[in-house]
Length: 131
Image (cartoon, rainbow, N blue to C red; front, side, top):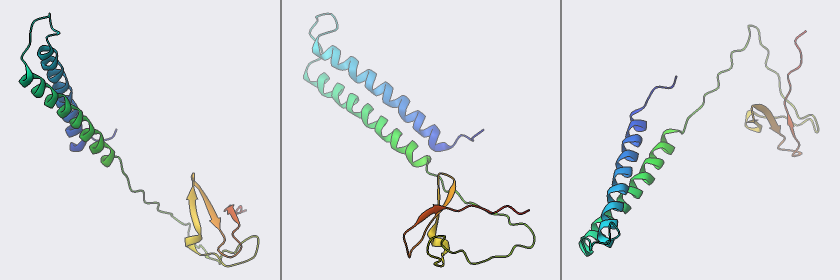
């Protein structure tokens, strides 16, 4: 289970405040327009206050969404545990025989892919069976 971070709790609080601001702003605008029962409302001051509350609620939602996007960024470190007596040999291109460097190998969709800097060939690296 993923632990609850303070940024997540802060985003939830911002969304709740935004919902309250949007509701209050809508009610004030409804009252200022006289749409609540045909009665003349609060007036231009009410329209101004209602608009500020409505826009403030929308801005709080945008802030909460940006805050949760920043929290979801992750760094992944891949550690490889090699068996006992491992011999490291030079990796060469299947097509042209050129020497490949670690910079030429990238992980794509969980598979190691290599692109030869000499001939431009791209292929997936495969491990030969040990037996």
